[in-house]
Figure 1 (cartoon, helix red, strand yellow):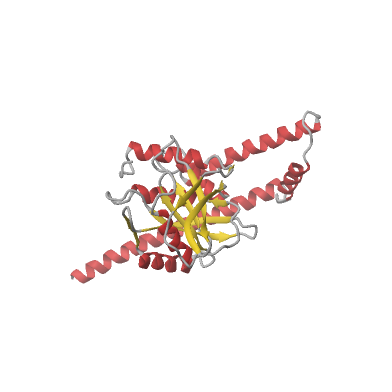
Figure 2: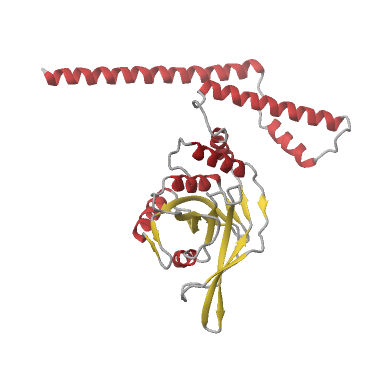
Length: 318
């Protein structure tokens, strides 16, 4: 994959990535189990089982961005996953950051100081997010994964290992999540068992805005405020027409009524302000005039600052 973000390979990579994220479905865990023989570790302990991993699109885009910017000598990139653990055992992965590392056939070196500094900086902004695991690029679990997983097991109990296939081994960017458990014989630990768990890719409304811009893979320019409002109004009219057709279909007996949908429609209608059209138009116009006044005042302020800067420069020259 080319390192240049403007290259065709880069565009193809993100096009396939976006197609993965657009299918927000629950993937069932497969029966593949990978065994990695590692040295014994006293920090690994049995904890509450993780049921599923819920991943937000920001994490996947962070992983891909780190991969295309990796050093030429690096075959893969790794990083820390941040999020929270829900009461039902679901791990909600909301953010991530890359961690420099060096890897060979028999050893792995992770920049621990960089990891801790990045974590401390992130906690200042998002104190509620904790370490929930780590990620790596590649088709799956490799020989050094057990060593890295053992390091993160000392940071948090029962960490998640997320893999993103940036090489499109099977023609698609596969995303998988694993948890590890120890295989022991008596008091002796023999291996670390990586078991795949279900992955749930989903996005909130705020993330969908960026997703709609990125899914085209090539955008000439971002829409202006007026263009964005026009597109939003067109989507709103389309939704209103769909709701209108559904209600007519239910009233005419062509479609079976759904109480949940009816409740959602009733809540949406109840949220509208109950004002006469003329009063509502006056409120909108007043708000628009206030915004135009703010724009005018900000323009005057910039002009005054620019003039003051030029006068100050001229005074210093004299």
